[in-house]
Image 1: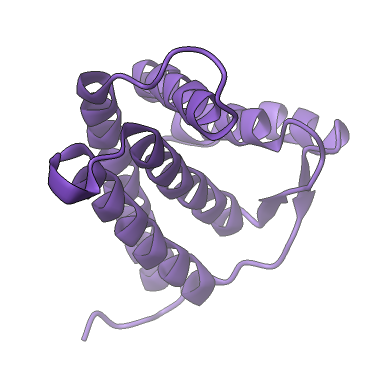
Image 2 (image 1 turned 180 degrees about the vertical axis):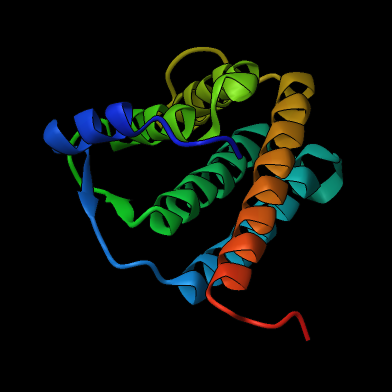
Length: 162
């Protein structure tokens, strides 16, 4: 993770999309584990068979990505508010937190959000399973990045890696 774009985060706070909160590394660890389960369900729904459900896969993969972004935000002592368009705010915050090298993945996560919306609200074409598989790879990378950030935060707080 590169250095966060503090100006962009400050603007999101000023707009009411983000608000300060205490850092809670344990909460972030729980959110990460939960996100990993969401991602596993998404992939299972893409694998076909009895659980085949691309729209459900899009929803689960997006939930995993959203939880990861919330984890990153918590590590910098911020959280999403419940304002309208908070999913868009989450992606803007992810851009500010993860830096320019993440922009292609952030664009695909934006597409994942739209695929989730089309499935949940029954608008637009159903999500494409092949694209969703690509998006789940991006979500996995996001979770891996969060896990590394949690490790760094824990080390900074003097936690041991027993």
